[in-house]
Length: 264
Image (cartoon, rainbow, N blue to C red):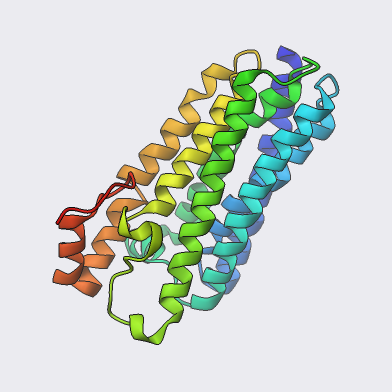
């Protein structure tokens, strides 16, 4: 199993590096680096089936479940981001506009390494799926079932919160207002909360396989990015700039992450 793990990891890394290199070239041509988010989301839908097809000793039914979880998450988020980037093109996400200014003296080179860092990240996050695909045990255990159910809760909550936000933004009467409908009444970022739940589900599912517990870093990494890096901090900064005191009041009354009844 150890040999298969490292061989498949090397294959997945080569594929991810190639995907992000092509995305880098496309981004240079279109002068829009936001497309890296789309590739990052779709990449798991490429790597996971590859792992399943090459992992000869794994139990087929477990492979199907693991790959389905990975592909559904990947395609849902990737498609959502694709249309968002397409809708705003040629304008970039604010994160990449900031990096463009910071790296202007060596723009292409710095973004190339940034894109390749995303390739490494997706390979690391795909390890829970890889370990499940290598597991030859001929039935699911309780931990795997619990992990799949937790994943289903997360993906459903994330899809619902995204749909509620899209409906809110599509209503002309919502212009300049803060979304406080549905799940957004109980959390300022329910989509991020349920994204975290998805990755805890991946990890728990992996715990049913040998060494699966080691992939605890995957949900912790995702939680770090959501809470400290590109998730809540940047989103809140932009929201305060665009909505001012209205959003500050929303911050005062509403949980930042975990859905919770709002304060009076």
